[in-house]
Structures are given as C-alpha cells and as structure tokens.
Amino acid sequence: MDRSKARAGWLLLGPALLHSVIFIAIPIVIVAVLSLTDARVASQGVFIGLDNYTELFHDDVFRKALVNTLLYTVVVVPVGMAIALSVAIGLNQQLRARGLFRTLFYIPVVTSSVAVSAVWLWIYNPAAGLANQVLAFFGLARSGWLTDPDVALPALMIIGVWQGLGNKMIVYLAALQGISPDLVEAARLDGAGRWQVFRHVTWPGLAPVHFFVLVTSITSSFQVFDLVYVTTHGGPADATNVLTFDIFTNAFTRLQIGYASAETVVMFGFVAVMIYLGRLTQRDRREL
Image (cartoon, rainbow, N blue to C red; front, side):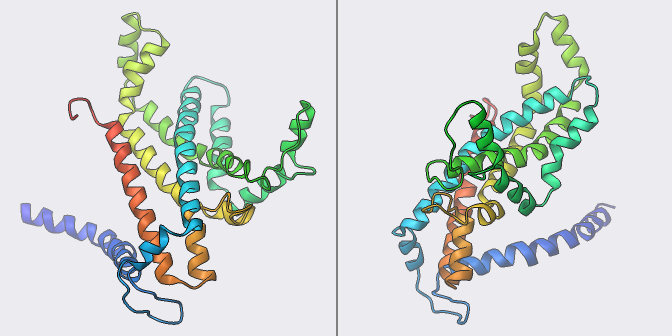
C-alpha cells in the first residue's frame, strides 16, 4: 500500500517536476556555464573563468543598476507590505461595497504592465500630467518626475507600490479570514484593545503569510523591467537603470550573452541573500 501511494505521488508530481527541470533547472545551469565564457549571440564563446565577474564589479553602470535595484527593493517591499496589510484589515471589516473596493484594489494586478506604465507616463507628464497639476493646486513647484535624476527612482517606487498592492492585499485578506474569531473574541473578553488584539492575535497568526508575501515581493521587485523599459528606459543618467534592464541591454543590445549571464547569476545571489535575511526576521525566538 505504501509503495502504491508513493508511486501515485510521484506520478502526480511528474508533470510539475518535468516542467521545473526543463524550464528552471536546466536554464539555471546553462546561465551559470555561460557566465564563465565570453559568449555572444553569434558565437558560443570560450571559457574565461571569472573574468566576467571581475569586470562586473569594475563596471560603474552595473554597480549603479545594482544599487538602484536594492534601493527599489528595500523601499517598495516593506512599504507595499505595510499598506497592503492596512488595506486588508480595513476591507476585512463589515463595510458596504467591500467587493467593489476589493476589485478596485486588485485591478492594477491584472492590468498589463505596459498599460499601467502608459497611464503613469501621463500622470507624470511634466506639462499636463495629473501629478504636477496636484502640486500646482497646492502652490508647489512642478517636478520633472521621470526626467529629474533625483526624483525618477522614487517616482517608479510609487508605481511599484501601487501596482503590487492588490496582490499582497488579497493574500493578507485571505489570511485574516483564516484567523479564528474565537481567539479575537477571547482577547477582547480579557480586556484587550484593538492594538493589543492586532499585536498578540492577528500579527502572530499572519506569520507564515508575512514570509510568503516577503519572498514574492522581493522576487517581483528584482524582476522589475516593463515599468523601466516603458517609462524611463533606464534614464535619466542611469538613475532608474535596474539589474533586469541592464541584463537586457547587455544581452540583446550589446549581444554580450556571457556578461549578461554573469549579471543574472549575481542577481540570483542577491535575491537568495535577501530572502534568507527576510527568513531570519520571521524565525521564532525559540529558533534563535
């Protein structure tokens, strides 16, 4: 019986495992191998060892892209999670038209990134955009949202937080509805206020979900590409150049496949490190 169950399990896992091997494991190995060569689009290249990695960390454009990506991640991920949790808690209450509000918050998630970027291009338009009209209404100076190197990356962070809000909100909302009402009621009977209920009941109950949202958010923020490609194309002065865009430029514009593969490996390493650090923040004190 046990062997029969094991065979059935492997049979059911087979398609997913095959997909993972073909489209994840094998490409990872290929990229790792290519990163050790000087491969270009028209040639397989020769083995050059760690030369690509050495060149990377002497490349000012790559370092700028790395810093921009890290800044984008450390701002968009925690801010997006905090806002999404707040919205989820609000929509978990007995409010009128809750379904409508949930739909409105989720629309940006299912909307094409190119369409979202086009809308925000209009909002950030320096001449007639909505953002500058709001600033002018309050008597503030107009801003070159996507043309000012000091403002361009924060402007993209705003879009990133807004676009990813619905996805995180839905996950948090589902988790909130899974918390036992009996625990909340027991805490209130013991005299706990709203903050105490949130701190001692709601927050611990969301611990596994925090880590899931954190991992998916970090992965998504490191993969930001469409937004940069449509709105700024990495400018001005590389102020919004991120790793994915730099990899794209090296691979498909400069045709340096080996160099772009090395960038990809480095990006994968940074994602793994950030997820691990995030995991440390979620560990129970008993595990520490």
